[in-house]
Length: 171
Length: 171
View 1 (cartoon, chains in turn orange, blue):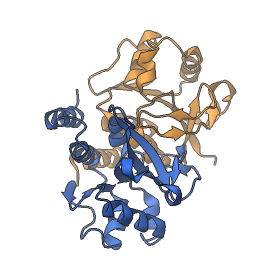
View 2 (tube, one colour):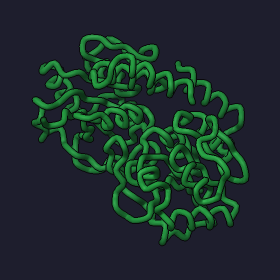
View 3 (cartoon, chains in turn green, purple):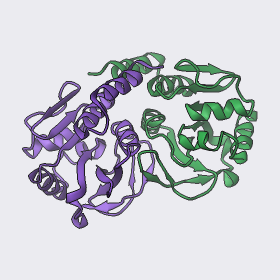
View 4 (cartoon, helix red, strand yellow):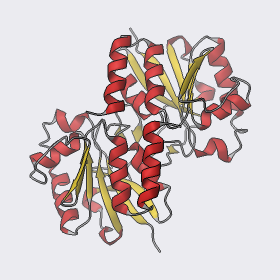
């Protein structure tokens, strides 16, 4: 069986930490693979200076039958363009939700979703999961990941809670 | 004045989250820039599947006068080769410490340092800072970053504590 894809959507100056736990632990699961996607194929440099290559461009993505989730990570470029640019992303999110595939967004990306009418809030207190949108603020990388793992159902709920407590409270 | 460099040393299957807070918040500081370094120039794919480009190779790095710190992030390849490979990294760490430049390591990279006699411990409880080595376990990404920021002295100690509490406890 082909592995289910989870797409990490990257913009310029994406926040290194916000989806970092999510992608590491999703990609470690049997039957799941994380790929990067962006509005164009140019590598996207993180806030931390990491120049990361792009697997797919939005306009050429067609593998929806095999798509389990799209994650929009935060970063300073969402705010720097007043959340207005990236019309391709708006259309892509609408298309993904039309197919009933969940979308997860954190920090600046939640403001983008609100600006474009997908949700009625930005920066919820830690994390919310409503109408197919998981949204979290930038201090809630662990809570965001917990909600994503529970939604993907790649581990038992009990395992996910154990994972969360381990990383939240330390060794 | 040329910005001080902080090097993030990447191996295959590097852990996305472990140095993620550190690189984002160091690179945001005036006068600091984060660059990636590795044993060769091939992009290094993270545990989360992010293919990240390399700015420097170890054998060609010469900018020590301007180097503020080297960060060795964790990842599964340290363990998979029983912490034995990468002789270039051992020599590089020795060279950096000879110049009295601090080295920070987390998770699998701390075991590498111990195996090669740089420290007498791996996986300390959350974080330690001794003899020029900051070491932390993989659940202590925030504590690791706090210690790195305090050591670099790029913010006041009070600002660093405020930053830590914000990310540890949430909004």
